[in-house]
Image 1 (cartoon, rainbow, N blue to C red):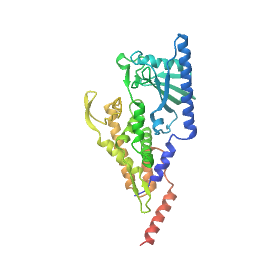
Image 2: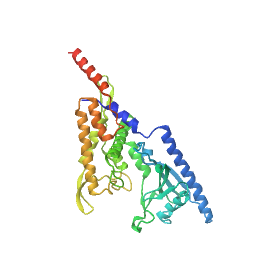
Image 3: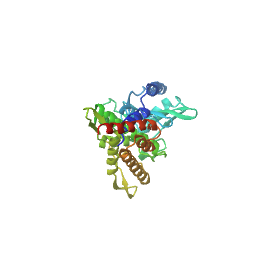
Image 4: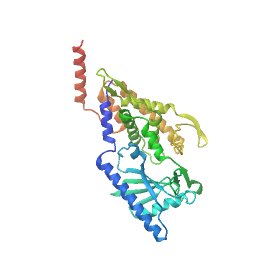
Amino acid sequence: MAKVQKQFKQFEENIRLGTYDELQTLRDKRDIIVDKLRSGLKKNFEVKGEKPPKFESFNQGSYAMNTGIKPVEGDYDIDVGIRFFVSKDKHKPLEVKQWVYDALEDHTSRVEIRRSCVTVYYMKDGEVDYHVDLAVYAAGEDGTEPLHLAKGKVNSSEELKFWEESEPQGLIKEVNGVHADEDAQQYRRSIRALKRWKQEQFNTGGNGAPVGIGLTLAAYYWFQVSKATNWQNTVEYDDRAALQNLVESMLSKFTLVVHDGEFARRLVLKVPVKPGTDVFVKMTNAQMKTFEANLEALKQALKDAGDEPDTRAACLILQKQFGEDFPVPPEEETAKQQSRSVVGSSSSA
């Protein structure tokens, strides 16, 4: 059996969103936008002779969970929560979102009100280079009410414009709290690997690919650490085995349910805090079928790599699933390893 742990750790280094420059750029964009929001609100409300609403910002999403990866083709992002000290009973969700949009619309050439956030895009050579998603919440006038997320777009029907109770910081606490120390490192390596697999294996936009938070929550619910103590009393982690076990668990959870008026095999995965919704609900039954098939292919590749005695051959199998950032050792390196193994076994005979 080939050992590919070295390659899995290098793979994470290759895809992990963690270099100083990348993170500093995202932090800078976030801070600039929050400052712009504060000044823009002040200006716009003073024109109306009113006091601007108070708010606080906080990190959420993969940045706060430390599970971010580099995009395959640009477009880095960061999620920021904006907690307004206003009553959801006095203000409509699109009204509050509009405050944010109006304060930021001239900050870059593209700002959009989306269903669950307001997004600020930073362009480079006509393409999106970075974007910041601002999730807009009402926390009550004294900040003690449960957070409610502003949902809906400007042209949405009225039933799609509403306040939804949400616990973004509770979700972060849940995801970050299930494992610790080196076990947590393997947990996050597995999440990042699944996210890159998603980027490589799903070339559709919209809801055609499983959402990143869905893959993160799959690990939250079903990831099991894979490690063993060797003869030198040193703990060795096995990311390949951990991922295979996780993918097998995900596949075992597909069940026959009624969705969009028909029976279909689906993975139903609910957020462990409010709103407790199914994160994959927007995927069509056909998209879910593709998701299951791709998971089956990933499971088989992980199994084949585990059965493969040659490290290079195992890594080539894995690279087809995870993309070119998954390292493949040169032939001469694996040849030397096999030679040492043969000599070792002969000399001990």
